[in-house]
Image 1 (tube, helix red, strand yellow):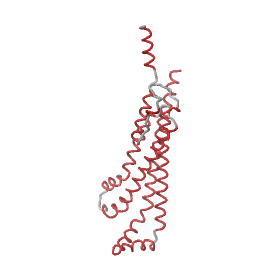
Image 2: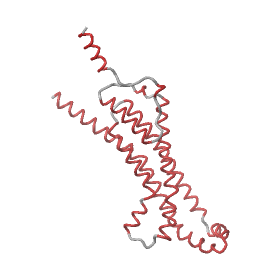
Image 3: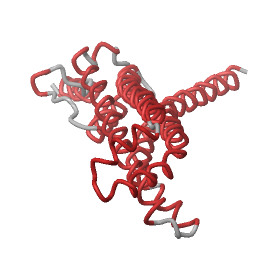
Image 4: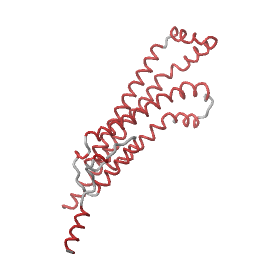
Length: 238
């Protein structure tokens, strides 16, 4: 009897800790919860459990993909809404006498959300170890990259279109709707117009880097870890 209890306890200890009760599994709601779930997958796989990639079902994979799309969309939307206010109003007309440090500080504000979420995505590179962590991270990054790249393209096209349509006749027709402010708006706009394409190019480039950099970090780190494993295996075999 004692031996049977010992064997039963040993079997319980070695049992897998994953659950197959899909009714109790809730999909991630945002980027932070998606990263937290990936951490849980990492804890399981880092213990040496060889879990098939199919454990992360199609529905759960799409959940991570949707979180990535929402993350990229919200970051791109924040950038799209904030950077015209800073670059086309505050800097030319309000902060035009600021020193270089102040301009750098204020110009970084529109990119703050993008930088924070990019850092969070790069943080999960260390969890890229097994079948389900790879699948979850790839789904998350794919959705995020697609959303950011699409936003970058649309942003540049929009400002290119505005630049091309900004003829003196069109701008005066628009400014004349503001009565006594027409002249000020007309000349103020043409002070801003030369900055349209450079700022759009800069913002689109930053969103493209934010889309690609987490992926690049993951694959570089994974390649380095695989290289260390092969090197250690050669040392041991020698």
